[in-house]
Amino acid sequence: MLVLDLKEIFKISDRFRGSYTLKPEDVKLPPDIGELKKPVRVNVEITKEKNGYRLKLGIEGNVELECSRCLEVYEKDVSQEKTKLLQNTPSEEGVIMLKPKDLEVTFMEEPDKVDLAQLVREEIILSIPMKPLCRPDCGGIPGYGTGLEGEKREGSFAILKNLLTEKEGGK
Ligand SMILES: [Zn+2]
Image (cartoon, rainbow, N blue to C red):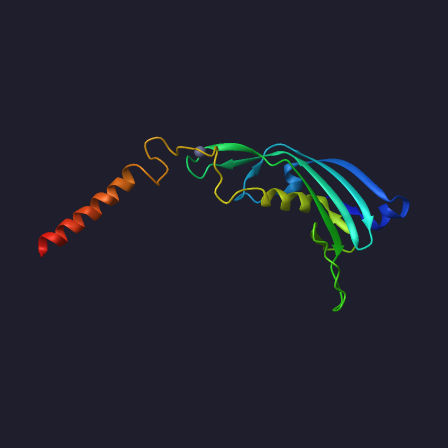
């Protein structure tokens, strides 16, 4: 676990920068989402704001995914940069924090503590499509097509046509 204690950090400074290498076992990506084979590079820059901490998160890495059409395993680049506002979870009713329009707010589970591995895991999960494709025009498994066109479709058309012909013939 890689947890930054923001309260301690901002006692001595008003800006924090750090670079980390997270191993796959640190990120703990759920296996049904994809597989991390190599470490992920993470850059963070944190500044203190009136209503929380502004965090710039840079991620560099690749995830192995299975193409939903041809079932081949391929690597997807999940590198990205995000800026978000970290806030403490409001503990009392009535303590409603102002939500800036331009920033995504993430609540810290523990006051003033941010778990980088968790943040990275969440961002990677969010960047993985529901139906991953090795390439946008993936033709599917050779001989089977994508399941959307070709023989299968012709087949159901033929069945439909036969049904209609039978009906007409029965009149
Ligand atoms: Zn494919």
